[in-house]
Figure 1 (cartoon, rainbow, N blue to C red):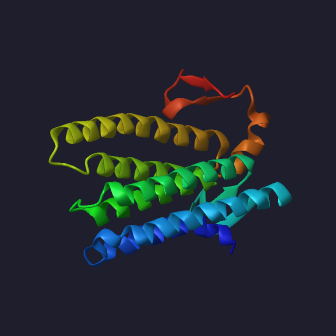
Figure 2 (cartoon, one colour; figure 1 turned 90 degrees about the vertical axis):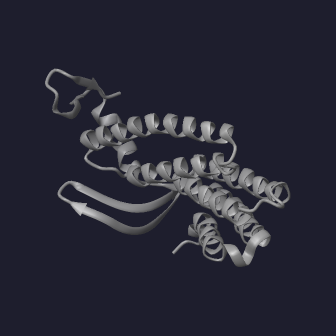
Length: 222
């Protein structure tokens, strides 16, 4: 399996490690999170070089679901756009981790913060690399949960609670729209594989689909 699977896997392992050993790690939790994210950034640089030299790269993971026309293969995909976003996400996340290691000193939930932010990084990286719309949607949901937990970190502050609630409600509206988009995409292309969708897009230009079985409510496919 490609070494680039470690780009999302390292932040995930850091988050799990900190979550399980939070009390023992305490204010040393950043010593787990920061190296993981920095290594992810380094691997993103290598992925950038690999794509420049050899083109796009696909990492096949496993088949999650197969039911009739619905086949869900979880796989990761790296192309020119993906590597640029990987550099941005892992680079900014590394800077945030380093800054937070000093900013959060003395916080009673220090380890919890780093577990959540590492998990948030994992979700963002996996979303960027996702080659399946269902995996993309799942990562989006995880990011929404992590956003709520990070914004409400100081839950004793009313302003933080209000801001977290507002973010949750905004994300909830986006969740509905994204879920509907995934559903309509599957109705149109009969697949959730992003590369297959892009390959078939030109062939169905100008056709229409029926939205949720409602007669007379057709949407043009561009």
